[in-house]
Image (cartoon, rainbow, N blue to C red):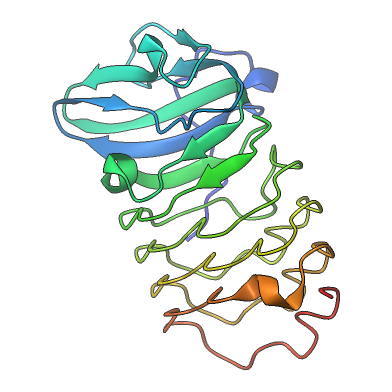
Length: 219
C-alpha cells in the first residue's frame, strides 16, 4: 500500500520545510527509541518526534538527541536536514516502523529497512533525497508486511546505483502483489546483470511474467 497523505505530521515547520522532510510512522510501547543512524556519515538535521515534545538537533550518529522516550502509541517522526544514513539493518528498530509517509530530501547515502516486518506502506512514485546512493542491497529485505504493487518509478532518481546495487532488495517481501513494473530499472544503467541476485526472492505474491525488457539497460 502506498500513501501520499502528509496531513497531521506534527512537524511544526512551514510547508516547504515539511515537504523536504523524511517522514515515517512508528508504533511503540512506553520505551526509549534510538534512530538507526550508522557511523561514518554526515548528520545535521532536526527531528520532530511527533508527540508534542521539543524538536531536537542531531549532529552525529550517536548524538543524545537521536534517542527519545515515548508513551505507548503511534507517532509520525519527521527528519529535516542532512541525514546521510538511515539503516535499520534487521536491528531493534525493525519492529517499530509501520509506514514511510514521505522520502523527503535528506541526502541519503545509506537507506535500508531490512527486517521491518510491520511496515505496510511506502510512498508512491520515486525515492527522493537519495540521488547519490550507490546501493539498494537488502533495502526492503524481510519487509513481509509491505503490501500493494511496487511503484512504477521507484528508482528513477537513483542513477548512481552500481555493481551489486539491487541484490536482495525485495527479498522475502511476500506481501507485495501485482506484476513487476516494466521500467523499474530503466535509469539504473551502471548496474550489471550480476547486480540482481535474489532481488525478488520469496516475493510469492507477485504475479504475471517478468517484463521482457526489465534489464535492457543493465549491462
